[in-house]
Length: 165
Image (cartoon, rainbow, N blue to C red; front, side):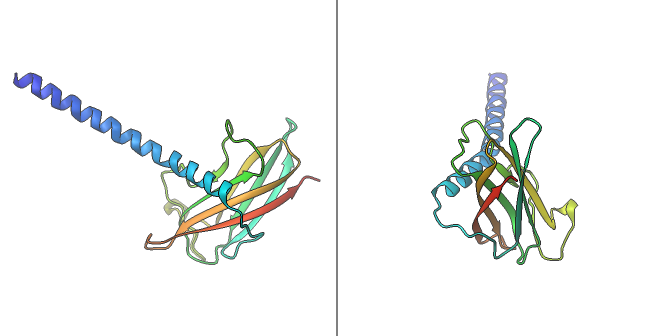
């Protein structure tokens, strides 16, 4: 009887550990979905950031599609646990991953003026990229970050128009 109870407790412990692992995997996907929904529902965008430099370009690939690059750097305020996502306006993302940064990584990325220590997650900037079939696109970008104490979340919505020449 003691052996049966011991086996039951061990199995229960394994099931609980498995459930915890699944919850940890679901969190980034939920955050990805939430950010995508925020972009789709937002109707107020700026054309440049007040908190960092944002530049973008588009290039044609060998396959005939277009790859866009978004460069985010030179923060003007301290930003911790930075996450970003870009969607091409009117593009179907059912079977396509949106360009994103910091959502699925185990490390938290920080952009702090004049502080660069890559191995600790302090970056000067980062690049996101994605694929589209259109030569001219409107990118809708969301950047989220927290203050140093992680007590407040900030976000900025930026819209960029790219034209392949």
